[in-house]
Length: 111
Image (cartoon, rainbow, N blue to C red; front, side, top):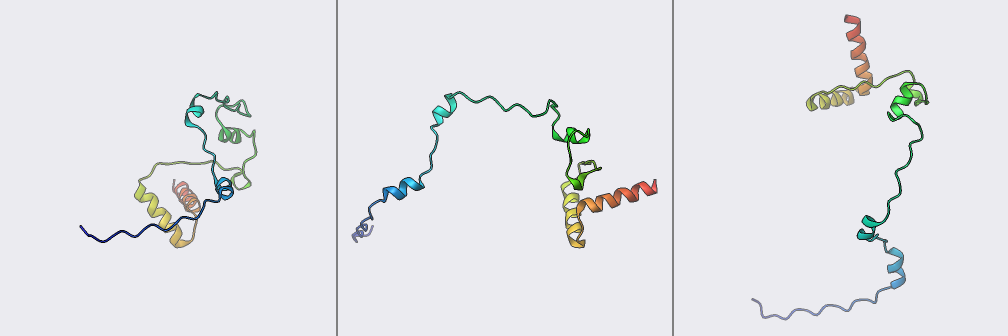
């Protein structure tokens, strides 16, 4: 153990309360947040429970122009295959959906 004396702490500047209050963030009381009455969940705009995708598929809403006349196709692939496809698409400067569409076209031509 050292016998040297510790240096005294420098004096702190007085706190600017106006700046402190201006920068303060209001945090709600966690107890009141739990026991306070909750507002009811919002009522969906459309009567359909299936959501926006179902409405678009059935023609009751307008899809994005780039998606007009198209449908989403989802498949499950191994992570390695997905990464390899994305890397290859990046290497050749093409979008993954463009490559997949080409693969589907080639498959359908062979059948």
